[in-house]
Length: 293
Image (tube, rainbow, N blue to C red; front, side, top):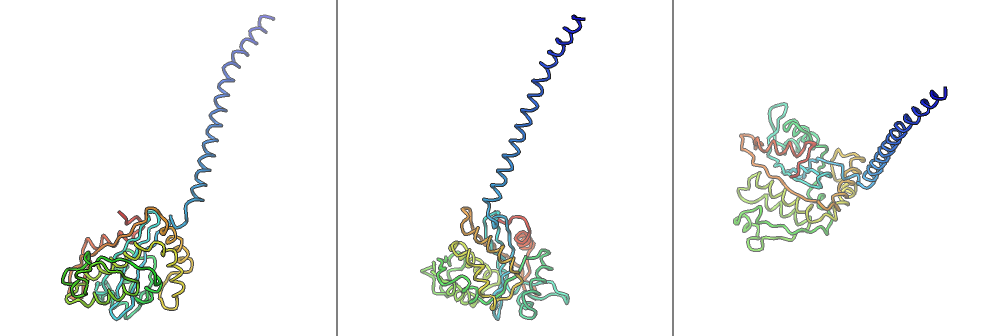
């Protein structure tokens, strides 16, 4: 009887010696896992708090400059890539239409920016998020009077063209937004000026304002609100708040950069068409993925 009781206690002690360390290990690893999960959740919470809303936004806009011969630009504001990317479109760009074809400029003049954006979407197979149309002077007023730039005309104009514009020797011009408008008007009147070349000049000039005036970006959405009676747009109030968040983020982002993309275009009987490379470039600019390099 005593012998059996002794064996029982010996077995119990041996069992406890095996089980207790195993239980301790289970408790230890469980506590470590819980601690890691809590740290990960805390880190994720800090990231969500510290990351500005604009850092997650991307906007793809069609900008239309109202005039007798309207001009157009696509603008991608890419919060995650900290980039503003332009691509100017000539008014002579040929679009698909129910009756056959029309040009972007003619569609705008006869049916307005909403219809022009719609036919552009049909032609490209991808849509901008919104359109914003205004005169060149209104766009200049949205920037304000103190958003000066230094613009290198030699990068977009030939020597003969610079001579026509009285900037053959002083190729770098200091321009206010209003003076930039005047410069583009003069450049459009150059003899033999081709749509693709003029689009390049326009895209480079607009890009210069965004590149050299990041401190003004945060006020642009408010400028659009202030000029609401002089603009045509399908941007909603919430869209403008989101746009303001993105522009505010870009104005202080350490990696902020600006670029403009140019089109080759091919001549047709009714206007100018996008080449295959042009179409791919513009589709990439308007798609959800990043268009920045």
